[in-house]
Image (cartoon, rainbow, N blue to C red; front, side, top):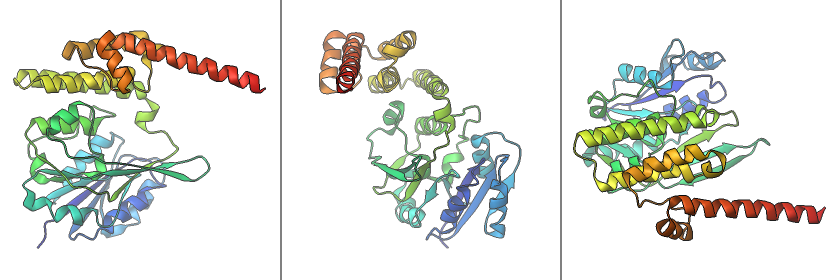
Length: 325
């Protein structure tokens, strides 16, 4: 008999989407699957929707203790040899599990992941679609340390992964999948990339934890990087490549969309100092010209020139608008 796959769905106040999420798990062409839904103390009608599936699923409810607790509880209940996590506002395409299981068991890998697509809901009711290629990474830990991680629902895990006593960190409110993957990679878990995409990440108009608290997300990322650095250093594995990857992560926070050079100079300095402590020559890859300026004049001066360009563009745009009116 083919191996059982457990699909674990944490749910909190997702009454508008959880039905589609559960049904997409039940509609998988791979058999057998078990669908486990953990309601995390929802205050809307999510639990009613969950109960409507009856004996087709395994479900449980309890007080609100966070998605990570719900995922870990799902793992406790799961009987499968392979595990799939699926957030209640996302869904799988029917062949997702089957195509991965066709190559997974014989591969010798512990984790398999694929590409991703995201459906962004718009105020007018329409949706904009985005997609991305996860790609194969020669050193998966190096990729993780640079703040890349496969999207949660694209991943399928062998049970042996969680027998290493590595669970979801229930203290984290965001970046939890990234943190767990770092620990898995450090523990020697092996990853296999399967090109293609059979999952849909839904981004509703309602804000998520990450979008509601971007600073908290950043603080979590900084904390995760510091913890990873300590563990790598203690194990003697903190090489120059890992240092550059982490430095790049800090610079992405400092010089990315937040534009901290203009908005919060002390925060910019804090993040740049973290980066330069690890890899003094690391530069944020904003553009070829920016990278060149960073290598010649340093990160701060490159960002100063970029800031000047931003202000000049704003002034030019304002001036043009005044002329039009």
